[in-house]
Image (cartoon, rainbow, N blue to C red; front, top):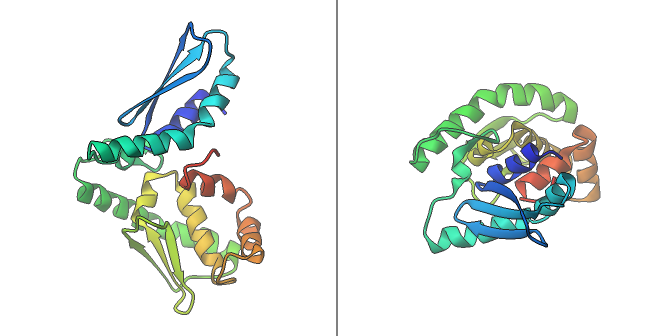
Length: 201
């Protein structure tokens, strides 16, 4: 992992990562609202520093969320589009409209690519504002719903969620057989699964 990739992992979670080398004995972390400041010993290698900071990603996300709630501040996750910083409106409704438009424009290529790979086709793919899950599948009607918030993340995350929901048309559960289908269709699925969970990828 590179420093740029590390910073992107924090950016996707709405946190600006600032790393500074100082004359300190240990790596020190300090969270401000939507910012994570890290002091790294001058003698530490870049690789060691990156791994140490990456290991604290979950902690940083949780600490920032506590600060966000304390100050009643909006999440900066809405400031990313397809995993990259973007100049988006301050109004959440306007941002969600952009997200919906971006996702809608890609549904065609999404279905064309992944339905033949999975071996199942959705009768319909819809978008919905969902905050507790990334997608759902009505197995009886063959309808897949995707969260509009997926557009804040790298496009591969949307691909993973779509594959996940398509695989429910094969196994309507999360059994080992289900996950085997997901892995068969998308061998690197766990990278995107973990990114959506806020875990190290």
